Image (cartoon, rainbow, N blue to C red; front, side, top):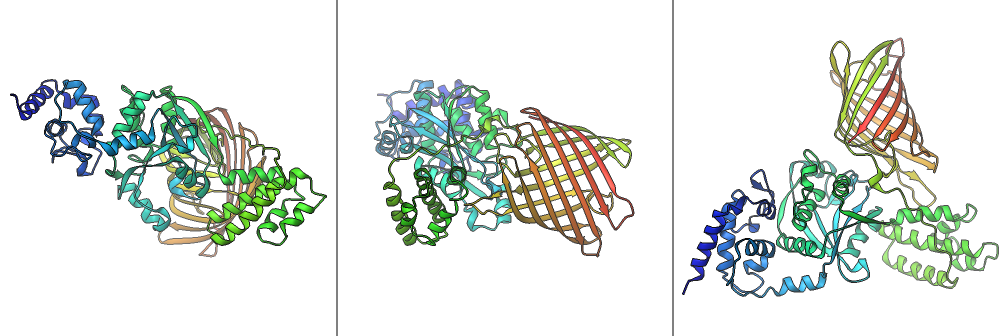
Amino acid sequence: MVSIYSYAIDYIQKANDLNLSKHYRWQQLLHIKNGISEIDDQKFFLAKDGKKDAKSEMNATIYALMHEKVLDDNATACKFPARKHWLVEKLHMHDLPKVKCLEYQKILKKLDPVSATVVFPTAHINSPASMFGHTFLRINSSYHSKLLSYAINYAANADESKTNALLYALNGLVGGYHGFYSMLPYYEKLKEYRDTEQRDIWEYDLNLTKAEVLRMFEHIWELNGVYSDYYFFTENCSYNLLWLLEIGRKNLHLRDYFTYHVSPLETIHAMQDESMIVKEHYRGSKRTILLQYEKAIKEQYIHYVREILHKDIDVKKILDNGYIPLEQKQYLLEASIELLEYRYIQGKMTKDKYLNLFHTLTTARASLGRGKMLSKKKPINPLLSHRQARVTLGIQSKNNHESMLLAVRPVYHDVYDSNVGLLRGTQIEFLNTVLKIDKKVSIEEFTLLSIQSISQVSAFIKPFSWRTHFKWDRNYHTEKLFFNVDMGVGSSWGNEYGYGYIMGDIYAYLIDSVQGALGLSAGLVIDKSLQFKTNIELMKRWYTDGTKQSLVHFVQSYAISTNIQVKFEYKLKKSDFIEHSNSTYNLLFNYYF
């Protein structure tokens, strides 16, 4: 009688003869890139050198499958169902020990996977780490309600709210956090992103078959509790999602779309380019819903919402007021409930106060009967936004001297780009490099990092606006290139046609020594049109050496198409440090890719 050990040796020999360890599928199952697995947790590997040696890991897996030490959920076949199924298929393995994977079968039955959806929570306007948005998977079951489905998420094991912002960013850049896959009910992820973080949600249904989703789930199970080092720009939430989709669908190479940087929206573009997206759905955040109620409630009634929440007016007086139309009463109470929940989520009231007022408001609203559904305008699909890398060619005229300009920005969006599909008033740029070319090539501007969050104040929501940058530019008194840091805060007001803002800034210039400045800025942005956009900013700076400076920045842009833009730019710099003012005219051609 042939022993199991002999069978294992035979299968290992057959696998080596077929060179299966170099098969693309096996490399995928181990998350191998350039010969090394991106999984950093040793418990993912059965061989000591499995992270760096795919052949050694394959041999160890075959031996373990044929030589199970236990026959329950801790068996190799239960821990690595995707590996097992692939090896059985390729090697025609038989006579494997019979194991009982009760926990796996329990979860599989609970999920009942039939299809998959990629979910995109849009940018979190006041969180730099979330300004790119986020992606995770929803495994859809045969249940009618999607809320009962489960979400598969990959994230760094860190709490941004409880960590120093600079330390959080630094650790995210250098792989200082472990990243884990997790599985949670979808309604919990909705609560986290849509309600707590006030992010709109876009859902993109994928055309994965039931068999492909099952194959993907098998691999998700293998990654349970396993970590890999998290990198903000590369091995992040969106990148690690691509591994799962590639495991699900054979001959899918989504990761090949990316080299130096992976962002959530670009991964969805890649799925669209692969014709994977069949339908999209939109879920507005509480913030978005409140803004829609502001439009539905007439101006003369909107103050009642704040008065109800502050208990300056009894709800009964609203119900008994014969001058307020029924529909407006319904909207007032519905908006009050939404704002109440918003403030409770923001931690601005106690649970007891929230529950008491919630009961009062919902009872009052029920007494008014069924009303007209709030008109909810669906925003533009983020997939219709410009791509995130940009190259610029242009002509500059400065002090009657003409030069050529060449600029490259790897990531992502600025306040002069088109807002289509993106969050208004946001900017996040890395490594934006502007070169001036005449008799020689010189750096006109170099931005390490620039972030802006200009969020408009409304009747219900009172955010502050802020911005920061770390860059070399020529905005100091002289035309020399100096490194400077800006930290600014302010406020913004607007409507559908545009918005204005006022910002107070603190600057630090590194010249021979550190030169500080206080700044005051007022800006206007007109962005009603999907193609035309006008930006005007007036700035005044007071330097620590007693000098003053005035700057004017005007930008008129026109989007010829989604990824092609023409931009005219005018800059005026006037200082009492020098006798004459300095005017710069730029005509720029932007291509996004």
